[in-house]
Amino acid sequence: MNTSFLTKIIPHFTLIIGMTAWASSFIGLKFALTAYSPFEVVAGRMLVASVICLPFLKPLFAVLKNRRKLYILLAGIICEPCLYFLFETSALRYTSSAQAGMVLAIMPLCVGFCAWILLKEKQTLQAWIGFVMAFFGVFWLSFGGESSQSAPNPFLGNMLELGAVFCGVGYTLSCRSLTADMSPWVFTAAMAYGGALFYVPLTFLPLEFAPVVLDVEIPAWMPLFAIFYLGIVVSLLGYGFYNYGVAKLSATEAAAYINLIPVITLFIGVCFLQEHLTAEQYVASALILGGMLLSQCKFKRRSSAEDIHE
Image (cartoon, rainbow, N blue to C red; front, side, top):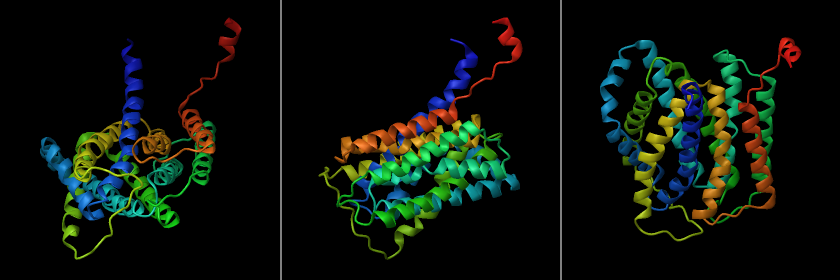
């Protein structure tokens, strides 16, 4: 197989894996929040990821010696996981995993706009059309959804998830700024350690949280298993693959794959949370996928010389 083709396709493949892991995180968070507080869930997943990231600790210290990189890295960590998970875990106490995934799909538009302004990344008309298609697909998907007892206040939950979206934009731009000369796995390790330092002290606050109620019964071991799953699969592999994709592609191209999250989340929700898809949601999901593919496809214009040879 052509090596050049593999080099081009691998970042896209890793982004698909990363988005699948992220989509499953909404269900994992729902499971974990049935027995643990939001702070305990995030602190637990960050501690698990931190232990696995120990091999990257030494190169991380080397990066911290560069003051410019340190400031950008700190900005990215504050955005995500610190503030991002604070918004997202709070959001999932009030809205369904499917609706949270729908709101998250707005991120590519925000990333594309900010990357255009701050990183001077050029955007084609085709890319913007694809993003707008996906944007309308997200809203169609949202309006076609049905609430359940696990989503007591969808509007509040979705607004909190929107706050997470803005934090995710800051994280993506920081990642894009650093991964040109910094390993994406070192960036992932920094996120894990920064998240652990931020959330572990919060678990000692004298706050009480009512457990999340699901429409399905789960075994007693599932909440703890979900925390380990979030730490290993989502925080390490999901973010690691996403950071790799951001390093190899533009911030806008990588962020476009976030449009896959609401679709994948809906299908996973059907399997594990007994959430149901309406006919409208199937059509809206196809619109989101079509918009994502349109924004990624690059059509090469033929020159007049090529036309003459034909």
